[in-house]
Length: 265
Image 1 (cartoon, rainbow, N blue to C red):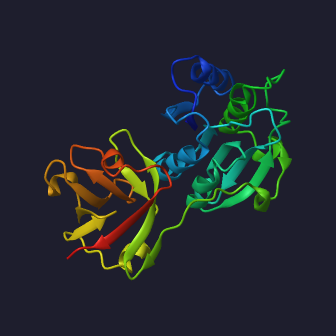
Image 2 (cartoon, rainbow, N blue to C red; image 1 turned 45 degrees about the vertical axis):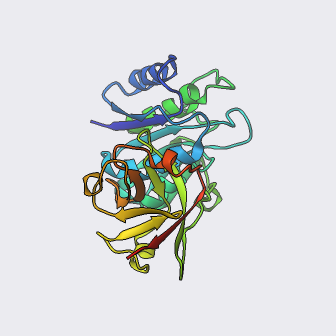
Image 3 (cartoon, helix red, strand yellow; image 1 turned 90 degrees about the vertical axis):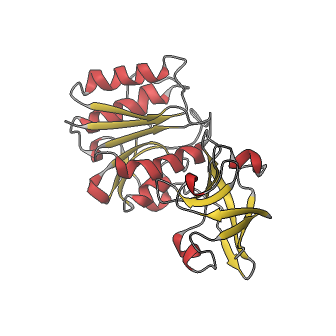
């Protein structure tokens, strides 16, 4: 059974997601659709890209449809991509939304531009390409259509990249950035394992985060309620949390804010 995963910023209060499901079901009735999330903040391409990067390795191989498309109807390209790992296919706008997942999945080995795809619905709405372009192309690919028949060839080097801030290390510790936050107020940082390995931070020891005392711990229960911890989350990403609280609120962080972390032992 073919799998189509679906991520968007459509929310669930309107019929947008259901209509896209219907389009896919009409074209590929045997496909299984997995809704990854439709709760991405409206137009937040980067948050969508970060979710795709961390979540798709846990999804079955198949077609991964993603629509966070603030420039719908404008000059941005619509694309379908084949990745090296397990030949997974990504379908969505070429605005950086697919870039991080494509990199995580081994890079793009084949790309086509699908804005005028013969597989799209007709007529094409100027404002609902999720229904008229992305969903039908994803469905046809899930049903076995060759990628080359979905659109015009595109050099993968021309795809839009997504710029992220980069952590840096120094004598005073690590200067990281708040990349994202979940509904619990846990804050994802841009610290890689190489930065951790090259720092003085040690698991089980005290740290300071923007001057506030905390602990580099494995889990929330390693610190008392209300206390701050630096930890590796379920996706092996370095993050900040407050046990039974919100690191985002307690540290008064905004997305992309600098976070200064230093050993305190």
